[in-house]
Image (cartoon, rainbow, N blue to C red; front, side, top):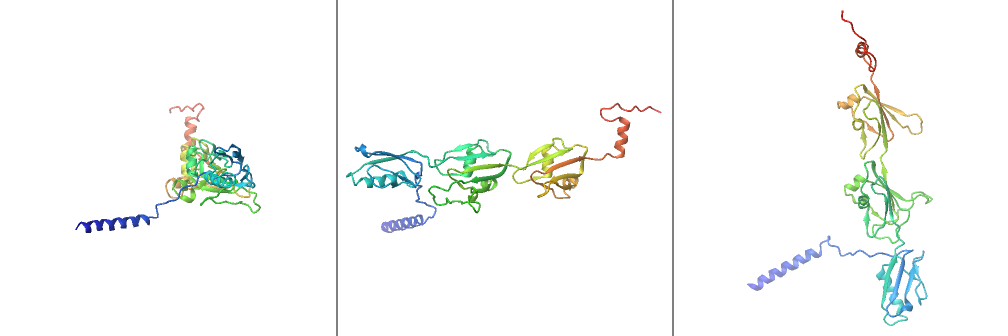
Length: 323
């Protein structure tokens, strides 16, 4: 009876271990350490053999010179451990059991990432680990209220040691003169779309763009400039941002002056704001650099007559004598 019980437990354990072994979510991959590049400085010491000590700068070809070693050693895209092992093997020609220590004394091959534009803290960041665009914007204090919701990432140099997922964007023009760049939406970043949140590489230049302005003038309480937020700016929202219209505003005909491509004369769009407010017409989405003009309504005969009777504002009222 006991042997049957133990056999059942053993079969169950083998079944469970088989499931775990097939689990694709478990990853045995370990990230590589810092990979060397041109400009980095490495220092090596050999225990008890000071004549073999060295300090070398990796040249443009990715190589270093080591004492007593005839040919330059290729160091580019190797980790400290990989380079130390190679140097140890080379020195075995001269020493029986060389004990080599090697470390990077200056990391000059990875320029800082620059971020500016509509973020709260512009500046440069030295990357000491993998970082992605949304995380870097957060480190910069996030975007300001004037942000237009779009981020442009310039990549003036290809990755030194490309890893899986890190690709050279290439030039954006046929002659290769333009700096490669890509545009990303902050809305897509916040939605967690992986393709919209790229890894930031050393030397990248990140610009968080400013929202395009529109202007509202005339019979509104607070005329002036306002920015188109992410997602667009409807006319009703723009009027609300201007604290609404005055009582004398001409609401049946609001004019929008819009830039016309290839022409110095603007396109004039007349909108019945009354109909939009009542839901009888679709709201108008404003475009960058639109000028919204809210005119003054014509006075009715009754209004003119009352002004004559009571006097215009700032003038002496006309006295009315009793009959």
